[in-house]
Structure formats: C-alpha cells, structure tokens
Length: 147
Image (cartoon, rainbow, N blue to C red):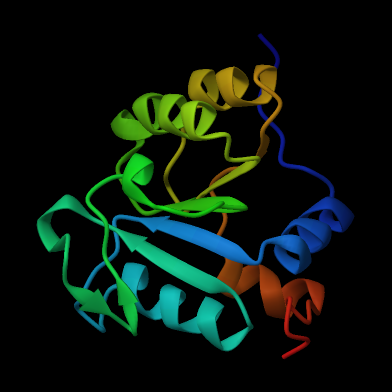
C-alpha cells in the first residue's frame, strides 16, 4: 500500500468552498476544545455545522441540535469533520460510506491510512491530519458564504 497523501491544495479549496453542510463528529460544549471553536469558526465561514456526539444528543450546541450518530442526521451532509481518536476512524468511514457522505476530513493527529484507503476506494474525498481553521487562512479560502 502506498503512503497516504492529502489532496492538492486546489482540491482542499474546492472541498471547503463546496461543503455547505458539515457534520462534526466529537463536538464539544467546552469552548476551550478545538471541537467547539472549530465548529464556531466553520459557522462563521458560512457552513452549516451539525454536531454529532452521543453524550450530548438532543442538546443544542452553537444553535444546532446535537445528534447521537451520523446516521441520525436527517439531511444531506457534504463533509464529515472528525474530532475522534484514530482508532475510531475505520468505523466512522463505514458510517460515512453508508450515509453517502462524499468527503471525510480528520483533524490533527487523527490518522488511519487503512481507513483512508477504504474511504477513497469507496469514492470519498479524504483529508487527513489537517484542521480547516488552519487551512482557511493558509489557502486564502473564502468559504461558502464568501466570508
């Protein structure tokens, strides 16, 4: 198996500009955690961000209802942003494939090359070990709202 490499910067720009609805797995109510402030950042950029966390299901986080699992989200998801440990990634990829999600993004230090290969084989765009809050300014991305 060849080593994983992320899509070209131009593809990452297209992904972030085109992802109107993002499911954020591992959402947090703690404003000091990346899973909270990255959600707020993505909302500011014009994305609809739907939080997913079984421990918070039914609550409201940053104006959005929290769902227990990806399969519970009642609308089309353009991208899943993963704030979960690497060992969960294989199962998350399976959920994304089942839900017909076209793209999966894993946060810094969330790495599983076999899961990424499985996702790509199923046709998903995969960005791994990156943070959109870092990529936005690095790449000069406007976002879906042009923010």
